[in-house]
Image (cartoon, rainbow, N blue to C red; front, top):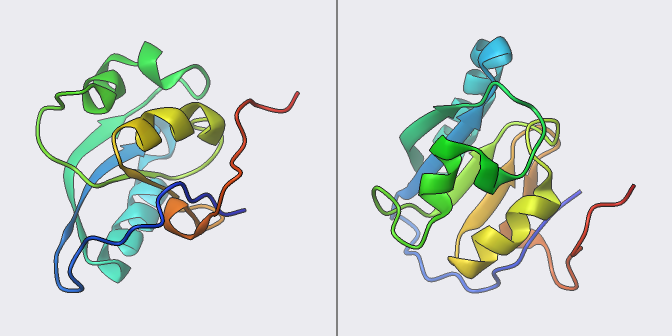
Length: 126
């Protein structure tokens, strides 16, 4: 499963991606390892780590993540790296990421928004 809402590549090959990384506290070590590995393989560095203890719910109902999806985040970032779909529904993250020109990566299953072409899903399937 691959998600891509941005076809433009305006980054130089040697430019470091700034990553907002989300993991669940209960599974922090293996998730952090997977996210660290993705960052290392993709010339990215974490600008923040968000520990999310609630695996379901809209991203805008999560105070730590909501700040990063707002029009004026705490600092500049390029990619939202989430370990798995259990943590967040990709459908709920598509619009906020698209609205702000950000990339979405799910390290479990290796889904990356930079390789997915429209049409993208607009609602979750039951």
